[in-house]
Structures are given as structure tokens and as C-alpha cells.
Amino acid sequence: MRSLCRVLVVGLAVIVATGAVVEVVPPSKGNPSYATRKGLVAPQTDISSIVSVVRNVNQKGGAAPDDLPNQEVAETIVTAVDGRVTESGPSSSEKSSELKTPAIRRALEDYRVLFWGTGVQSEDRDASVEGTAYLTHTLVPNTTYNVEACLDYCSSVEGCVFANLYYEFNNYWLDFETPDKSNLKCALYGDVHGEEEKTNYGGQQSYLAPAPLIYIQQSSGFVLDGGAVDPQPETPEGYALVFESDKATEAPAYMEFFLLDKYDVDTCARECNQHAPDSIGGVCQFFNIWRAVIDGVPVTYVCVLFSLPTDEATAIYPGEDDVQVTLSRGYMRQNLVIDGGFEAYDGCLDFCYEEAYEHWIGTSPAGGKDDATIFRAAMYARTAQTVGLLGSATGADSFAGTLTPANTLTTIEGRVYKVALFQNSAYSGPTFQKDSFLEILWNGEVVKTVRPGYSDWAFVEAEVVAEGDDVVEIRGGKAPAWTFVDDIGVWLL
Ligand SMILES: *[C@@H]1O[C@H](CO)[C@@H](O)[C@H](O)[C@H]1NC(C)=O
Image 1 (cartoon, protein in one colour):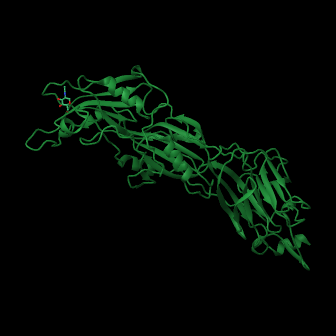
Image 2: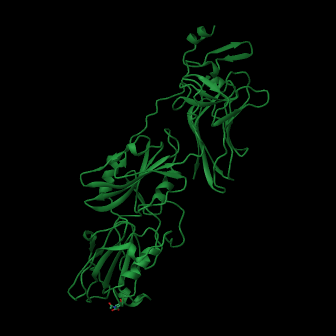
Image 3: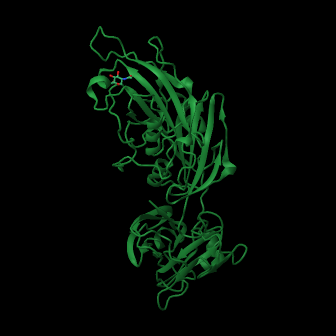
């Protein structure tokens, strides 16, 4: 009987109406005519587009003649998004209100001279640095060539790894308007710049003409030992450092790239956290940050997002011609749900199901049977071999079941998280799936309800606030309106 109908009803579950009782081949029978999986075509990293933007960006800066000293370091600016140059502005609403000080105190011995400037004879002319990752500047007492005060200032500013100390003459503003009464400028950078980057010779008219123009003398560079940029950036919350390399990631599930004006892993992580989901991995789950160097000079900092995690094996792009990849780091976003894709369920080779295994527990309401189960059945899974099912696997009842991780989540109280998953409610066709529904519960409270009816794999998400040791539950299914769930995650925002 069944096999006959299978021939008649192609592509959907076999549906046999016997009087008022509807009979559909339940998922437990391993319906071979039904396959949920669609070929997901994951986009590859658009490395050539990244490099062409890298070649054309100008993020060099320094202390302009009338810039105020001792300003807080500006938020990292995102200057290009996927090749489109953006408004110059902070990438997020978060703004730090005070000058951040580095966690580790530094001493004078932690710095060394990279280059000395010219002398201070009247004919000596020098230039100050114009380079990437300019942070801020100060005026140090000019009774001596005050290297120590300058490096102390660098030590007090988070992210400072390089200081350029120089005299700026004929700047009316320095001579008369500033309380510091000093023309000895100390400019700080979050990256190291060489002598070849001394390109600002002054030349501005600061005093009323015909007075002489601004000129620079004794422009020296001091570098924090340990190399370019922050030698050991703190891993952003919610992430794990996966690799450090001199090659950039070229992996599938590429989402987008950004150019930053500083090597700032936190800003890259924030872009990842805030990125809109895609149909491959859902949320952003991995980022690669690297420093682009052209002819030995740092030009920008590249932040690339991916919706699937990867590792050093895909860090394969060394740069090309004049563009060199340096300080490449990969960070994986941590999923608080252990085995969110049920992959560790291995009760059989290719077809079996269970109400629970090590990482997930399915429960049915009183009187229900197998209302939430885990399947090893590639034809039902969105990715790999395994998938969760809500609604009686055998079709024995029409109750909703609940899937929950076996362990509570290691959340931080008060922090905002995103619960994300993919759901599919297409199994028994448009008619029988019309009542399908799915709920996300957080500590017993429904935080999201979707009634997708008949739906192919679709992304579902909810934002929640953690109490610590939180419990997430996925409830739904109303056989024959079954709901498959896969690739479940809880992510720190
Ligand atoms: C120190 O800076 C002040 C203000 O620009 C300037 O008037 C003075 O001549 C400078 N002293 C030296 C020794 O350069």
C-alpha cells in the first residue's frame, strides 16, 4: 500500500487518508523520498577585491599643527566595507570615555631607538612621521630633548607601540596659545613606522605672513620592544585565538571584509558579533585580522568575517607583488552549546534515532512519545549526518517536544547572548505543515515563537540576557507538522 502511494505522490511524504485519520510516513520510518538538504554553496574569500582596496586606501596620520594635545584615542574607524569606502566614523555606538591605560606597566628600557632625527642647527630640517594607526600626541617640556617624558606618555596610552618625538618651529599656536609652552611634540602610534615614513616637513603658514613657515627638527622614532603593533592583543571575549600566521585566510563561508585604521581585534570581533546572518553558517563564527604592508610600510588593517569556523589550514594567502600579509590572526567565536549540530550522536552508521545522548536531551509531555528526538539520517540533516526532530518521530501523537542541551550554559550573568538555529518544516508538505511552530525558551520563558508553516531551512534567532548557568530549550513540532532543527548556537554579543 505504502509503496504504491510512494509512486503516486512524488517528492513529498506519502500521504494516505483513511477516513478522518491522516497517515503520513513518519520520520522514524526513514522516508527515502524526502531529503531536506539543499546544496549550500559557500562563497569564497574575495581576496582580490580586498587587495585592490588595500592598495588604494590612505589611513596615514599624525599630529596636525593645531591639533589639541592629550586627546583620548579615537575609536577605531572602519574605512571600507567590502570595497565600499564608508563614512569616517566609529564603527559602533560604544565609545570609550577615558584614555585607556595598558594593563602592563612599561619601563623606559622596554623601548629602543629606531632612528634619530637631525640636529637643531638653524639650517637642519627634518620631517615628522605620517603613518597608520596614529593615536594621539602630547607636548613634552622642551628644556631638554625629553625622550623619557615622551615614552612615559606612550606607556600610558593603550595600544601605543611607537613614538615620534620632534620639534615644530614657527607654530604660533604652540608658541603662544597652549598652556604647555612647548614646541616639542610627541606623537603616538599603534604601529611601527620607519624613517622612510617621515614625510611631513611642515610648510604651513602659522604666523601671519610674511613670517617663516613651520618646520621640523630632530624627528626621532622610538619603538616598544616586541615588534609591530600590540605584540599580544587580548583575545576578545567570546572568542578563542586559533592561529597566528603571516598568511591570510582564504576559506569558504566568507561574509564580508572591513578595513580598520588600527590593528584592533576588538573592533573586528564587534563587527563579527553584529553582522547579519547568512544562509551558510548563520551567525559570523570566525574572523581573520591582518596587517597589510606595501613596500615595507603598513597601510591598513584587514578584518575578514566568516560564517563557519576555520583554522590555520586555510591561512594560505601570503600577499602578492608589493602587498604583504603580516600579523595574521584567526579567532573562532565560541558556541556555548556543546555539539549544536548533534554530530556526536553516533548510535548507528546511517539511520537511527534516540531521545537523548551525551549532549542533548529530548522530552515529551505526559502521554507523549518521542516528541523530541535526535536523528542520525543524512537525508534529514541540514549539515553533516545528524539533526534534531520536534514532533512525534513515529507520528504517535501530535504533542510538541523539547530539546535541551544536557548541560547548562557557561554564560556570564548580565551579558546579552544570541540564540541561533536553523529550522525546517517542509517534511510532510504544505498542507500537513501549516500548523508547524517553533519556540525558543530561555530559563523556561518563551523568548521567541515562529509559525513558519511549510518552510525550507530557515534561520531563527533570539536575543537573551544571561543569569549564569542558563537553560535553553527548543520546543515545537505537532505531527504531522514536524520541525527539524540543526546547527544550534548560543553566542555572546
Ligand atoms: C620651547 O617651546 C616654546 C613654545 O613653542 C618656545 O617658545 C621655546 O623657544 C622652546 N624652547 C626651546 C629650547 O626650543
